[in-house]
Amino acid sequence: MINYRENLKKMEPYVPGRPIESVKKEYNLTEAVKLASNENPLGCSPDVAGAVMKTFGEAQLYPDGNCTALREAVSKRYNISPNRLVFGAGTDDVIAMLGKILIDSGDECITGAVTFSQYAAAVDSMGGTTIYAPMKNHGYDLDGIIGKINDKTKMIFIANPNNPTGTMHTAARQAAFMAEVPGYVTVVFDEAYQEFADNSDYPDTWQTLKQYKNAVLLKTFSKIYGLASFRVGFGAMDEEMAEQIEKIRCPFNVSVQGQAAAEAALADVDFVRGSFEKNRENLLYTTGALEEMGLFVIPSQANFVMADVKRDSLEIFEALMKRGYIIRAGAAFGMDTFIRVTIGTRKQMEGFIQALKCVLA
Image (cartoon, rainbow, N blue to C red):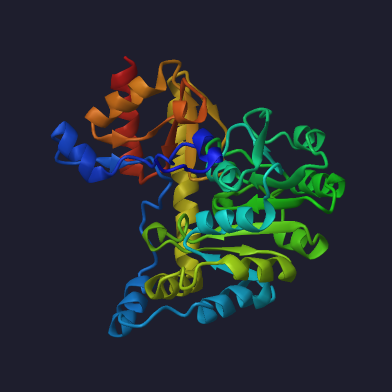
C-alpha cells in the first residue's frame, strides 16, 4: 500500500471551466460559447502568430531557461531589474514556487474567504495551513487580514481585482495595509486582472515593490493578452527571493513558443488598449442588463461579473449549458446563488442575457 502525504487529504483538484467541445457533444449543440474561464474573447495580438511560427525551426531545442529576451522586455516595460523577475508556466507556477520556498509544516498563510483556490493549494501542499479572512462587501477585508497575523504567518495572498468577485482595493488602502504588515510576512499581490481595471484609485504596486522587500507582484499573459494556452506568467519580487526560487524552479518551465508569444504580445499596446475598451463597454452592458432583470450584481473591475440569480447556481449552470452558454456556478466558491460570467463580445453577451432570461422565467 502506498502512503501519500498526510496533508493531501484535505486538498481537492482544481476544477476548470467546461471545454467547448465537451459541452457541444454532451448536449448535441452545433455552437457553444465559453464564458467560464475569463479568457479574452478577442483572442491575442495578430503579431503573436508570426512570432510563434518563427520558433518551429528550432523545435528540437530546449527553451531558453532564463527567458532572456522576454525578461529584458518585461524589465524595460516596467522599469525593474531583470534579476527581480521569476517566470513560470502561468502565475499558477509562480504561486506554487512561492509556497515551496516559504512554507514549512505548521506555517500559516492568510487570504480571503472567497478567492483563487491555487493560493491554498500552494500552502496546503507544503504542509502549511491556509487561514481565511471573511470578505467585506464581497472584497478583501484588509483590516480583517491584519487581525489574523501571528508569529506563524509566513505569507498573505491578495488578488486585486479579486477572482471571482471582481472587487478591488484602493492605493490608499494598500499603503495603509503594508505599513501594518510585519516585515517577516511576504505579501503577494496577484494582479492577473489589473489591465481591465478603470478605477483611478487602483494601486501602483510597482511602487510598493520599491518600498517593501516583503512585497511580491504577480502578472500573467493569460488574460488581457489572450495567451492562456501558452502558459506564461511572472512574479516581481526582491532579488534575494528570486534567487531562492531559482533553486527550485523546474528548468525550461516556459516553452519557446510561450516566450515568443509573450514578447510579441507585450509589445502590442494597441491590442491591449482595444481589449480594455471593449471589455469595459460590454461589462457595462452586461451589468446593466442583469440589473434590469432585478438581479444584484457585484461591481466588477475585471473581465467577468458575478450576479445573484437567487436560485441554485448549479441548476442555472446546467440549464445555460443546454442552451450553449458555459459559465461558472458560484457554488464552486461557496456562493451558492451566484453565477460568474466572463465578459465576451457584445453578441455573446446579448445571447447570454436572452438565455438567462429564459432560464429564470
